Image 1 (tube, helix red, strand yellow):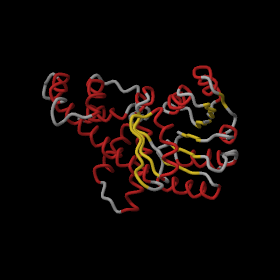
Image 2 (cartoon, rainbow, N blue to C red):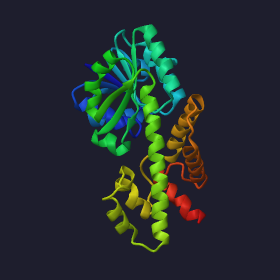
Image 3 (cartoon, rainbow, N blue to C red):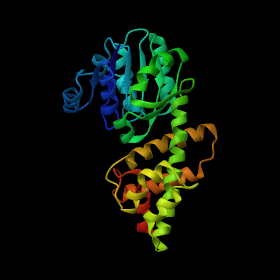
Image 4 (cartoon, one colour):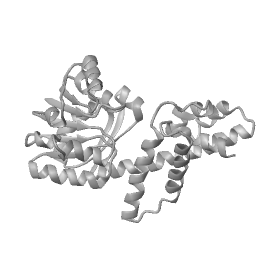
Length: 289
């Protein structure tokens, strides 16, 4: 089976590497050619100059890019993947994007005999590096059944959530829940510090009880140490929350806490923290109190 991967960012670089290491003949495309050259030198495979060239002859084309506009450009834009994909091929989009663009590209693929699966991921850069991402998918069952064994190369869980757009909607739920957890953890740790507690000892104790979370286990100590130069950037989570809040306007869901946390992240951006990890919410509390 021949695969292609479009977008070699902090996630896609490693995900594409797992495809090649699993024995799939993989061609990559990246806007920065030097990154593609580096990937080929590390993993093998090949790189192409356009998304269309990368997708030529591929059975499954993967993508992990920035936002809706980036996705449209590499799929249906000039020299986009759909220009060269063969009937029966599958496009798997790992970008966190809107459900609207997923449905749009699903319909455009149908017209060409191409299947489209929206398949956003959770697990961060560490999950991509270790090949243990959680992948939530939307699309047709037959296309998913063909793609799942390949997606498994870089995932610990791959689940079809429903029809087109369902993967993106599930990822929105994920983002709502995790930012709420980060805000709660930030407030708790800031409280512990101001109360004069041994905050790392506090973390050790409460992580064994009901307060335990992935964020606590993986970000608690770095939050205490005021370290944020890594991980999932604030700029990207604000992009994601913008998608969530726009969808909530459409479906009528009330999101008061999510909207407030989005504004807290806006304050972190104003502090110069656009590229800081999302756990940097605690720095805002330290500054404001």
